[in-house]
Image 1 (cartoon, helix red, strand yellow):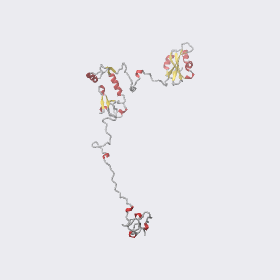
Image 2: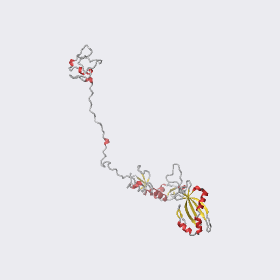
Image 3: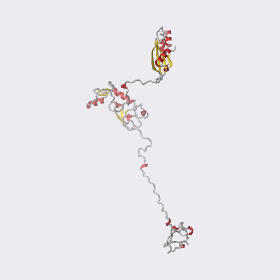
Image 4: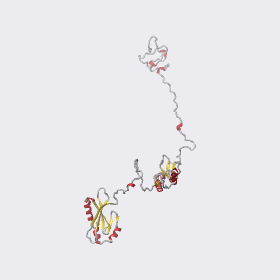
Length: 332
C-alpha cells in the first residue's frame, strides 16, 4: 500500500501508527477512494481544475486525505485536498471536505502583520502622525529615574522634566541598533580601514551613558551628522597621513605658477623699400620707366607713355636726353 505524500513528503511514520489500528477491509476502502475524491473536486470546481494525482496521507484510524494538483489561474503549485472517511465494516468511504491548500512551491502572500507593527524605519513622511504604543517599553514616566545618572542629575538641577523619558531598555535597544547599523564596526567602510572613530578629531561624543561608545561625526566629507560607533572608521580620519609626493615637510612645494612668463621681443624688421626710392646706379636698368630717377631739373615722363624697357635704358645717366622746354623725356 502506498503511504507517501508527494506534496508534503514521507508520511510513513504516521501511517504506520495509523494502519496498525486498521482492519484490512478499512484500509482498502480508504486508500481506494481516490476516484471518489476526484469526482468530488469536479463537482465542486469543474473537470478542468483537477491535475495529476499526488498521493494519499492518513489523518486518523478512520480517515485519509487524497491530494491532486490544482490547475487554477493564480494558484500555481496549489493542491486539492479531499478528506474521506469510513468505519470498520463499511464497504465504501464518504467525502468529508474538499479544500484548496498551498504546496511546497506555491506562491503565498506575506505573513500577516498587525497594523500597529507595519510601520518600519524610513516609512514616516512629512505630515504623518505616529503615536507610540500604550505599553511602549522604550518609554517610562518622566518622574521615574531614566537610569542615566547624568541625565537625571541635570534634569533635577534645572527643574525640568518630561512626561516620559527613554528607559534603560529603550537606550540599550537603540545602542544595539546603532552598533549593527551602517555606521557600526561591521559596516563595509569600517572594515576597509584600521583607524577608528574613538581617536578621531572629528568625533563629537554624546552625553550620558551612550557617550561611552557613540558620538556624532563632524566631518562633512564622511558620516557628517550621523551617530557613529567608536569602532567605526573611514578614510577621512583626522590622523590620515598625506599621500607621498606632496612636497617636502620642511619647505613649501615649488610652484611654477608664481612665475611671470613673457615672450621674447622680436627684432624690428626693415622697412620695405619703395620702388620710387631706389636710385638708378650706373649700369642698372630699372624695370619700369616710372622707377627711373631724373636728374635735378628733369621732368618725369608722363604716365600715358609706354614704359621704358630695360634694354632701352642707357647705362650712363648723362646719355638720357632731356629737353627742358618739352614735358617728357624721350629715349634716344
